[in-house]
Image (cartoon, rainbow, N blue to C red):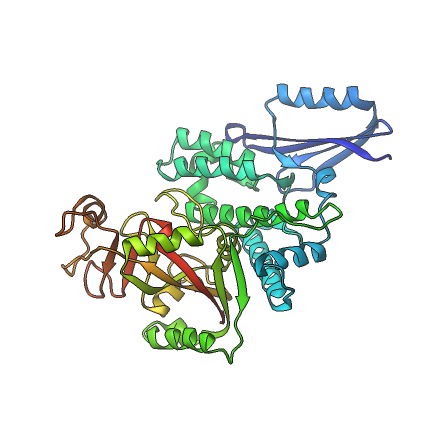
Length: 438
């Protein structure tokens, strides 16, 4: 068999016929055509025959006529251009550090990629994984960034719909982008209830988060394939510096954690801060500084997030996903869309360990920020009021100006622990990343 020169992946998702099938065709330079087909998640059957490009294109055309659609994946021929993971790690570490070699940061990158791999395997039932270079693979090949963007838009719509035929049609489109196994026992019409019976909106949201973080990292692998071994200058938004435990700055962050954690949160008793990384925003540092000067009222607040999100945050920063959509996963937004923070370290750590938002995580990271709160909308009643998000964004303060944030003290607004919300990411300066042993 010769060298592979072309490859097409197709999928047929039709729950009315209980179909969730894949078909892969390969063309080799000696005229060999390799066909592989079956149900998504299974090895399937393979057939090898001669016929050249005509036979290859003919079988692809046949499958399209029978309801199959081409999947937008990066085939194996493209993935062979990826740089070795060791080269990628050196290049990415150099970019994070601004050119310095740092084995501690190299190990951090390894751990973050490993966290993504674990979450992808868990969320997809073992069907979606990530290799050492960060490249995401599905049963049909390496997934593309465009597929993830399109899948987010579909999940957005699906999350806001009730079970039924309309959501079923969107589910079928979604699974053509992000292939996942559906058991034969699901029976005909399974797509209408797939989001409830076989997964969840939160689970798929977290899956897309991990996919996006890994694809972003894999882009560096492709970029380092040239002889120079360079990565794009804007791959990572943040520069990272490991603080020495004897450094006063290190101790100040640890003291802040110990002073603001609450023993009532059981997980705080088992979390031990082991590393502190100082962060510098290389892309929007000036803009954030100008925002802080304009908005004022800068407070040090914690932001907790799942470990699978950290790589994405270092690459592009925080952003605010819509309430029913997905970006970097933020759980429990009772005060509307925004970036949620707290002066309570253990409250924020609850998001990092997965207590508030889903499955527990053994890899725990948390950001300490300097956040410009500006004019704060402060609920006064003890009970939760669903009008708080709207009023905070629509009403004016005593000076007749808009509010910049929501500041909810314990015992007000229906919360037991402090909550702060800002709706402009430029108000949040990520100053330190703290890593814990759980």
